[in-house]
Image (tube, rainbow, N blue to C red):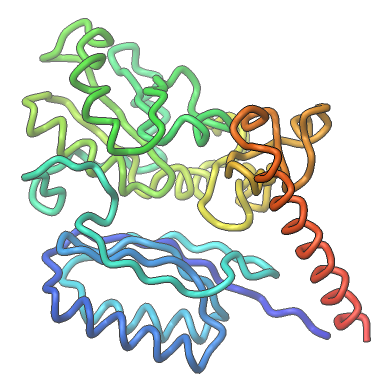
Length: 309
């Protein structure tokens, strides 16, 4: 059985998205999914669109052409490829924000920081007058980040504004002249973060255009200042420096990324627990997790037998 070559496209765009158009686009995408092998996660809100889709190239082309008809701004697109599907199905969620910060009157489409492309990013973050902030969640930062960057240690992006209020000034020697450079996976969170900082009166605010994914695609390994792997929100878990599936897996009990070394720890039981969640669940929970893992393993064996026939 010849395998497919899946195209994976991450995208986002901030623009005024009317409710009737949101519902119309959602229905049309579900029609495409019904007739094609299309999977992914898309989030629609009045402020724009955000998400990742996975399909064969011809289906991706149809979807992108359709989405472009609904947006009045540029789609920030990152492309990757895989021999396997990285999502089980297509999910489309309609929310208040395409990336949840929880701060009213933030409008990245009208007011944000200065984009910095990958080539200029190295020079900016090496500047001693620059502080570098990783706007991602703590578990993403734990498996890879830029050298000397500040980790706000947030559990989710909605905690970032409080971190700014409580901690940012302690990192600034001079609020008027210090460069503030921010980055995230694909660019959306740091773009919204720059809008927040501008609203609060900060100056000299920059963000990495296209995020870590674009940077790894643009910068050769010998000049690469990103250390470790980049967490992604699909079944690949993390990508290495060459944007291929990395060494991490997901603990299906708590959802944390676990390394090969983590999986060798005595606390680790595949699909049941890891060292992060050893005290989080009851024995009844673990029995359920164990039964679920048995079903997953059984399905894998059955699918392997079908492929070999």
